[in-house]
Length: 448
Image (cartoon, rainbow, N blue to C red; front, side, top):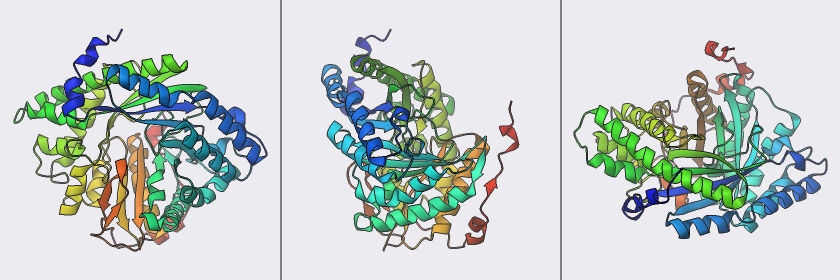
């Protein structure tokens, strides 16, 4: 049993080190809402979300007050819309956005499609609608899974997503491509991820469940300051112990939320998800380990140690650690990453190398506005290959900054932050992307 007294040990972390529960995300299964009429389907979706999530925000606020633990976001994830849509998905998108607004959550994820092996007619309709939907809605997030270790890489979907990312950026150019900040392209997407913009409620999930995302980069950095200069064995042990403590808090909050909402407790996702606030940076953890700036030689090794130690500490603290769990490296959302990119220490290629050992992938990276759809697809394909070959989740959330060039800055505000526009390799991959088809699964996928 988790004792409330354990929370008292975390008060310093909350007050001085930016520790928080980053999100409580309610996953809702919408398979029973399918209807041939899109408006009827949307109405049924809206009604179910409003019925199950009516108390999500009030309960989160109650727990914050009683335990003194900041819960930054309350969110909803739903069944991938392409699985319930039998016609035009745009009316469903509008109903989803309306439900998010009325429930008071900051984001709702699940305007999604799973296309790792091929596309249904519903998938194709949803993909075509993504740019318009993300331009017109406020809180709806979209994701598409284009690859998996078991299926390989669907290069037709990769090519299409390059076009969609580009079109989304153009439709939201007056907001620095904000629509692309709500769009993720996955390989090996997980079904219980509570973090946006890639959250959705997978087909194997319960009817309704609460998943909690915990974050604490500042806590880890402070812990490492006490062992400055010590061998890496000590560094790893320190991170593990710190991850254990903050995961225990997440476990308590998740169980409390599930009990009060009368739904199942899903998972705790222990991910070091940064914010633009100083003192809440994953990049600064890496510099505390000894690299001058994120991106310097040794950065990937430091990130590998961090990611592994976080997971080892987390699994000892909860029976149900899931989601992505590890370290995130979103450029625009991490002050240390922003500074490293501005200084030229972080390049797109170095970020790609770092994604081999972190929790997700190329995240919240602004690229020049004249980057072609084919080049964007090539970036997606490279990242998907890392995920497929290494049997891990990878993702791409990049923002073509229309009208801007390398060295300029995009501004999103809030948790999404700001970022310098990073140069992209100017050599083309158009012929490679034009081939289409499917890159076969690696040999180690045949494990039965």
